[in-house]
Length: 149
Image (cartoon, rainbow, N blue to C red; front, side):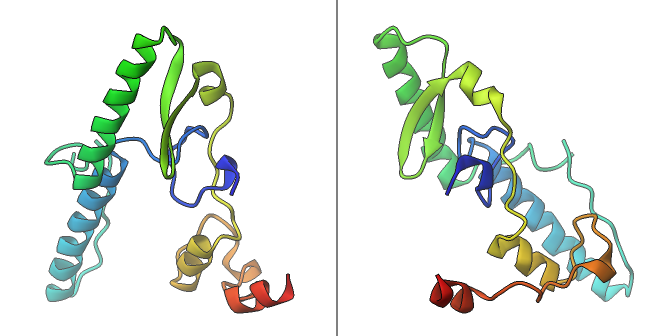
């Protein structure tokens, strides 16, 4: 899948994940789970804003600890080989590097037809489109798509 269509990625198109992303998502998910039970018990609708207050603190996930260690080891390897001006990136399953200019040249975008986006729409999550114009069931399901291609 091209880097511009990765389903869960940061803004940089050169890497699938940056360290800290998994921890931030886990922290926000935990906060949402806690808020959901509170809202349900009080029969309230609540809004959770996650920026800064919350997902940047706390302990990193195991995935982020391992990824950060691998990024650091690869960065030292780049320095050892005199490869300056490069950014370490994660392209599963490998840790690689790209010139920084290439890393910032394009932003990563979600594929609007990906299964993750379609599942979110089926749950009633809006991505800014007019709700009456977009049906989460409009596209082919995965089984139909794989049998027709």
